[in-house]
Every structure is written in C-alpha cells, then in structure tokens.
Length: 322
Image (tube, rainbow, N blue to C red; front, top):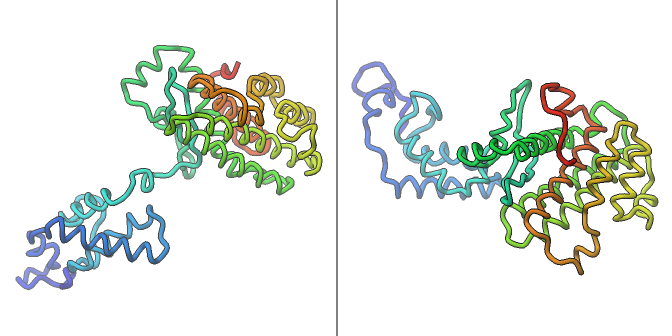
C-alpha cells in the first residue's frame, strides 16, 4: 500500500494525510519485529549503531506502506513516533547519543563524573555546564565551593582545548607527522583513563592510562620539534615524565614548564605503579587524571589554534593545577 497515493475518498489529498491519518497503529510486537529485521539489515550492511538507529525507522515502516514521512515536527505520524520510541529501546544509550570529540573526567568531591568536549560546527557558544554529567542539585552544590568551581572551570577548558586541539594538531603548520600520531595515541589513553575512572571499581587502570597518556602527549610535542625517535626512547627520557617535560620546555618557549613539572612531579612511577605501589585512593586518582589531562592540553595548545583563555579573555586565570 502506497500511502502517498491520492486518497480513495476523492478529497484530492494524499491518503496518509486524509483517511489514512486515522488508521490504527500496528501493535508493538509487530513494530518491534519490523525494527529488528531492519536492524539486522543495517548490521549486515556494516552500519554503526548510531547510523542504524536512524535508518531502522524507514526500513521498518516500509513494511507498513510508509515510503516517505516526516521524522520531526508537527507532521510526524503516530506510527512514526511510536516506532521511534521503540527503536530507542533497542540500543545502548551511549551508542546513539550525540557524540563528543573527547571524553574527560572531573573529580567532584570524591566522586568521578564525565566531562565531554561536544561536537560543534561553525561558530558556537559552549555551555560549560552541559559538558558535565552532574544533576542540577549537584551543580548547585558544586558552585557553593569556590575551589571546586575553579577546578571545574580549569578542567573544562583543558578538555575543550585538548578535545578540539588534538583533532587539529599541527593545523596550518609544517610539523613532523609523528606528532599527530602520538597525540592521537595520547587521546585514546586519556579517554580510557576517564572511562575507567567513571565506571570501574579498581582505579589502577586509570593510573596506568593517565601516565601513558601524559608520556605520549609530551613525546608528541617533542616529535613536533624534531626530536628523533632514538632519543624519545632513550633511557634518559623513556617513561621519565619529568625529563620529557624539561626537554620540551627547553624547546618550546610558551610551554608552561614550571607548572607541568610540578604536576608530573606528583605522579607515581610508571613501572612501580604497575607492580609495587598500592592502589591509590579515589582522590589521589582524580588529581593524577586531571593533572594528566592538563599536561596533554598544555602540549596541544602549543601546536594547535585552540586556547580557551586566549580566545575568551573573560575566562578566569588558571588556578588548577596550582
């Protein structure tokens, strides 16, 4: 049945906008069966969950005679709205949510929450609060502590600078391509650290990923200025975050060397943390992770055009890490 054909009653309107508008919606079982078949088709085509969540509606409703229809607005037919509601329930929410460029973490009191650098197109105003997955009550609690609010502002700036800057690393500059590869690897490690902190019970994986992400970010900066691989892998540099930061600071004038050195000086040894050191507390883990996010963002600011504070002078002067 083609619902776009002229209505049989002779009104001159399409069937879907006339007599067909009042037709009953198939029951949920029938809709779910059609959506499941549609999802099987999308899966066989190699579509990602986010793509299938959109395509499933059209594929399923074709079985009920709907060849074209509105997906949003006032003209959405009831069957489409119901199919959308059911389709959403077929997917893990995080797989179909609006994506972000980077996932970071923020320590609220002794609790971890996720902090997203959102996808943005063109000129846009970013609401810091929408980056943070705290409830409205928790946000009100947060602003009652100036120290916590300052820390959140600094972390949000770091996540934005790193999220956007790592994807534009070396933009409009002639840099060693190793730098872009290494900053991408740092991005994956820091996302893993944030994901583990906000969902796991043992934080040692967070520590390892945070330390490795810091190392890779510092090496990305050194690669950009031509430091050869043998030196990056040498015993002097290797996993030595302090030595890596000193070397980068000597080569990049605007790098906040003193602050970076203070931060990495508080980090546990990479090898010892794997084998010998006790599991860190939640608060210790949070400061290591947020420190790693800061270092990676500071490297990224040197080799991209992203700098929240430079672009927005009203953003407070940095207070965290001290």
